[in-house]
Image 1 (cartoon, protein in one colour):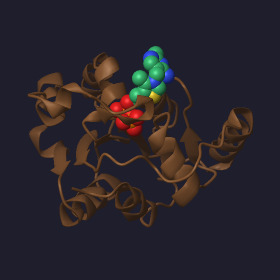
Image 2: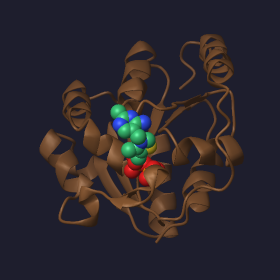
Image 3: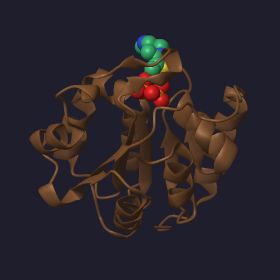
Image 4: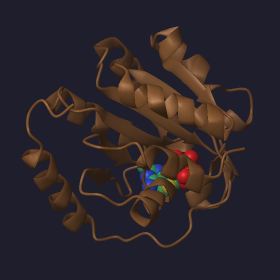
Length: 194
Ligand SMILES: Cc1ncc(C[n+]2csc(CCOP(=O)(O)OP(=O)(O)O)c2C)c(N)n1
């Protein structure tokens, strides 16, 4: 099982001009605490919308790699988005699902992936290429997968099986400040930065 901190820091150390969009709750806390940067777009409260927001940014800025750090419960709530993105074939989009098999933010109720459901299977069924659907259950697999999603064209789906412990620290809820900081940062990013 991969630790939350490892799932964040292994990606953070590879980042340059990529946009990161984080799911509400735990994933946003991790990136605020461990890997805060102007090109992070945090989502708050909007369960299910993380990958949709990322796909929209990726459409608006095809010259920038956009990585969604989604949660299993949240992506399960908006599964249509993987069909939309598979059909759009956005080469600059990667969807990373931090799959702890629970709705941790609301108390740890099990999600469908704790049972028979597999995001890798869902992603292939949605239309993602087989070789762009990646799964990581240990740190080595995760590091190799991050290298691919940073350096190769997507669209990718990367399913990361992580521990069920919550993120460390508290959510900083200064939503407007973070939103404006992100908007200014992406505006300033020269076209062709990828
Ligand atoms: C539309 C909607 N329904 C319910 C909630 C309450 N809620 C907030 S976080 C969360 C669980 C999210 O689960 P998951 O995506 O697996 O992320 P985790 O908390 O495990 O990191 C729920 C049910 C919400 N914010 N919005």
